[in-house]
Length: 144
Image (cartoon, rainbow, N blue to C red):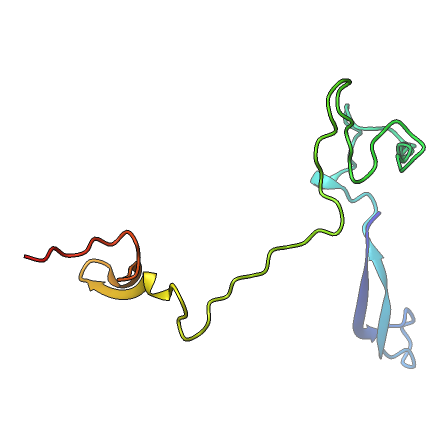
C-alpha cells in the first residue's frame, strides 16, 4: 500500500447541531493512502518467470589473491619453454633517454623546417610545416 504525506488546512465542523457547536479553523497533518491501489487500477498478479519470495541472493565467488597458487603474480612472468633461453626483460635501474628540447633561438638544425601560413577562398587560413632551406630533401635551384 502506497502512502503520501498530506497537510489539510480547513475548518472542523462539529457533529452537534446546537448553537454552541460552531466550526473552527484547523490544520491536519498526516499520511494518506489508498487501499488496494495497484498498476492498472487493481492488484498485480504474479507473472510467470519472476522469482518467488523469498529471493535468495547467492554468495560471492571465492576471492583469488596472491601466492601460494598456480596463477602468475605481477609482474606476470611466463617461463620459457623447455630448451629455450630466458627472454630478455627490463631490469632496474631503467634509464630513460633525455628529452631533446630545441633552444628558443633556433639552434642547430632548426632551419630544416619552416612554419608557413596560407589562405585559400575555399578553406580560409591554414598553417603548414614545410621543408626549410637547411633540409636535406629540398632541391637546390639550378644555376644557368
